[in-house]
Amino acid sequence: MVIAVPTGIKIFSWLSLSFSKRNMTSRIINRNKNTFNLLERFPRSNRNYLPENKNSKELVIYGSNILSTIKYPPYTSIVRYMVNVPFNLESLIFGILISDAWLQINKVGNTRLFFKQSIKNLDYFFYVFNKLSHYCSAYPYLTKTSLNGKNFYGIGFATRSYPCLTEFYNMFYEKKVKIVPLDLYSLLTYEALAHWICGDGTKSYKGITLQTQSFTVIDVTFIVSVLIYKFNLKCSIHMQRNLPTIYISSNSIKKIQPYILPYFCNSMKYKKFL
Image (spheres, rainbow, N blue to C red):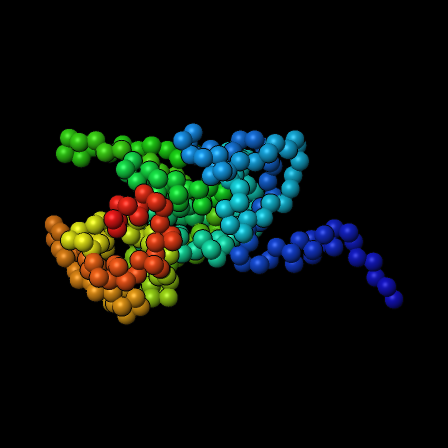
């Protein structure tokens, strides 16, 4: 006996099989012309834009940062659960989270990612934003902080709230306090280390100092052990204003340069190494 399968079930099954791979992110969205332009000084080839498509809906697939979704309408909860972090972005997110980025979880368990840099690191900021802009609904915003009578200006962005980012929240937060992930050894790749240096690294004594003052001495000792055993780096802990930092020797930096430089934007290569 032949059983007729309703058309709706056929379509749903086809979509589920086609877009179930972890390295793809799927969304049903309305296309429009409100898209992200970096800045007029950036080459047109580096800008993200979408052609206008009147009143149509499409299933848009993101295996990497193909398109920006700035100013798109709010997503439904169903669509939010269709979004995943592709494999090629995991190290980037991990690297900025262990440095300057932070996460915020809401009551229903969806998580937003925030990232901020000083105006001096504008090129690196847009380098990161360009890769994560399809998770954002708004343009970057400017910040102003006053300290000891001086004003410091920065730029930041925030993503939408997604269930897929909650996985990172569970790694980095314990009782709402940011911690060093217990699985740091397996999570810390050369790409993640590159973004960590871009965000928290300063050039000193021909080496690099990681500004890890937000972590405890025990956490920093754990980080140093991972850097030594996984990357064979010569590291030491230094105290600045009674807070721990990590110094990586110049010889160690030279040794890992070929592995981390591909993940640096040009301005960071100059500031960190030359």
